[in-house]
Length: 255
Image (cartoon, rainbow, N blue to C red):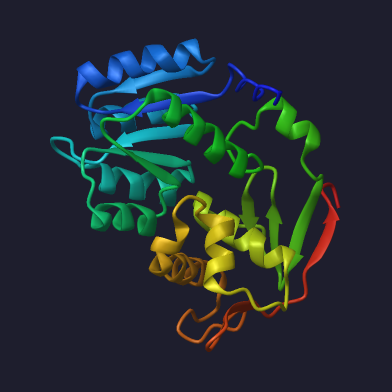
């Protein structure tokens, strides 16, 4: 008999952003019973206020809301805060899912959904981001590799998902960009095709969204290349995929 999955630590905080109280409140209650600490917001503006005052590890975000919509808020969460995001959407069309993934969302569920499935997706996203979420669960911190990556003047702390340039300035990266960069750093000077990269950075149904990885690579290039239009670090291998053309070293975290 398979062992039950380990419970998410109570210190893991989830922010549920949805204007429908009839969905948001029962979902928040269910997540609390599953061991999460949960905050609620009925709008993007309220979510921004809560995020300015509190720390959260993951955001469950409705797309269609009055005022600022979920897509706009998602861009802010990823670009300014690097938080993992799961979209809650009533839309079933592939276009909406693709837009969400291209922005950098980690996953999505289509309403109505089974809350047990949502919990499974939250756990999956948190496992993938375990080295990068704002406050790492204690178990993850114990088992994470205590090293940093260095390459071409850049330094990545995988435990804190902290990318710094040669002068020590921090460059914010999203969850998807972080996983993509780690995939390259773990396989320097190797050609990685889209299928393999998508498996690493997107997970579920990744094969449906082959454009998503191209967009994430474009975003990552704008952050680490001297000239993103003529990339030297992340090179396109025509007919093959992409390759990190850099020497990568793993150094002690305190080194």
